[in-house]
Amino acid sequence: MSETPQHSEETHAERRESRRRIVGFVGVFVTTMLLLLTAYRYAIPTPYNDWYLFHVARDTSWVLGKIGHSSTLEKRSLREFAPRQVRATLQAWRAGRDTATPEEIAAASNDPLTPWEKWFYRSTDNRRRDAAALKESQDHRHDAASVNGPRVSFVLFPGIASEIDELQEQLDSRAGDAPPGKAEMTPEKAALQKHMEDLRKEQQAIYRGERPAGDEKTRQFSFIVISECGAIEVMAIFLAAVLAFPASWWKRIIGLATGLPLMYAVNIFRLSVLGVIGALDQDGKWFKFAHEYVWQAVYIVFVVAVWLAWVEYIVRREPE
Image (cartoon, rainbow, N blue to C red):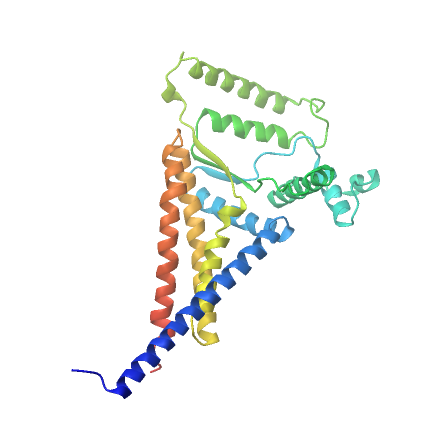
């Protein structure tokens, strides 16, 4: 049976409309995604990205702390700087100056630095150094941005190494703003120092094979949350797909308000799982496989699944 002219015209019209929608979706999707990724590229060396990465690392550290023995954000102290100097320097940088005055340093608080202050100081100092290096460089095409991010120190099972780290942290916290090596040695600090030296001797005995390797039960893993760990690229893909699909704006808002927090939560779960794998996998082979292959595939599947669920249950849902 042959098609009637009217039916043939309707079929061609439907095909043209279908092709137009597909081309429109692809065009808007690609354009939006490129704009979002380009915008984030320029947002990486800014305090806004520092704030976002800090919250990603903070939430990951909180989850890991519930799973294992402990998890600390920005654990390593800035031993070469006192809290007063860090805070005064940050204030000077905000005011557009390179250094703080002695009066500003003396007036600043000497309370222990918060994880945010440690990270923000490191990131700002890193950007300033990179900018100075780029300015002095003859090759202006060089990208001076360094790989940097908040540090998460996770201890799954405690042992000699983790106990040494905890003792060192206690000693550092008691050093105050005195210059390194000139702090007063109180009886309490002397006891901590003696205990740490004894633990180091035990650790060296294990390394030399004089004691069983199983005596060191520490399973810990430290990692930095860099920009690629923030899942911004994944969120950009989802956001672009939602905006490109023909739907009312309130349905798009529902999709973004639901999908983006879900992807953030899944990313925190991803980083937490990788932290546990890193602590258990001393050689790093399984960690590398999970990080570079498994979770990449899982994330792609998750984005597609959430987007399809939005299309099926929100966009195409008929009003009752």
